Length: 205
Image (tube, rainbow, N blue to C red; front, side, top):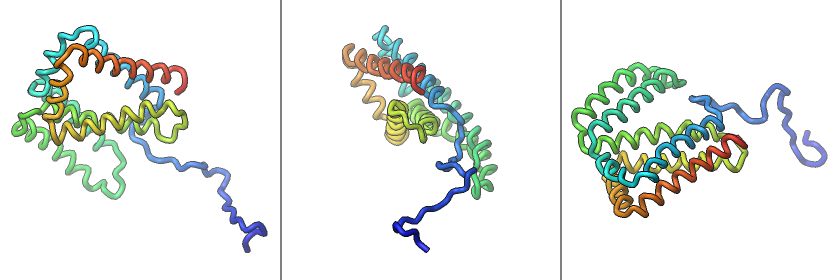
């Protein structure tokens, strides 16, 4: 029978949490994610802000084969670790074939994808790095968590473009390095953003 006021109440067992526990991969706290993201932003932006002549190095990056091999190797190790440890549920039967196919694909990419390899590898790395940031901010109620979330979605957006259309990063770098003002402004924004994330990581997360 329905209660007199017409509201149907569902009782939950005392030991059942109000919010379901979703499986996570990295077990990274929001504070740790904020510190890592903030420190990386500061380390990347500060040298460019202080030394505008580094623009020449940035212009060489898209076609740097050495940078591409280095970044792609990081992506290989990261992805291999994910495939070896992640819970795949009903897709567990695909774990071993994927672990075998991954190094083969890595070798084929190095052999046949020489054009803008560094840009494509950077895009893959950005896509990998976005997940732990979103994971750390998940189900957190601080408004300042959006700083980490926005950074993660910027990484996803940039990663998708750089993997699919790698010359976009080349054009972005050329546009930024066309004047010292643009170069300094871009790095100043990244530096301020990193410092803000670090401040909230140490005070609120």
